[in-house]
Length: 56
Image (cartoon, rainbow, N blue to C red; front, top):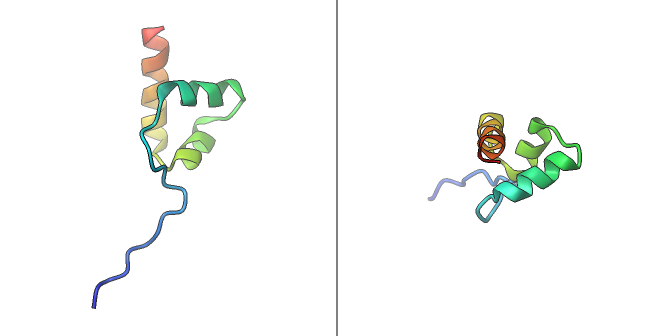
C-alpha cells in the first residue's frame, strides 16, 4: 500500500511574483499573513521584501 501524503491546502500552485507580495504589503498584511497566504516561510518573505526594496 502507498503511504498517504499530507495535503497542504494553503500551498500556492504557481510561481510567486514579487509584485504580488508588494501589493499585499500595501494592503497592510504583515510577513506572517503573507507567508500563510502563499504557503511559504516568513524568512523567504522577508528576503523577498528586502530584495524588492534594495532593487527599487
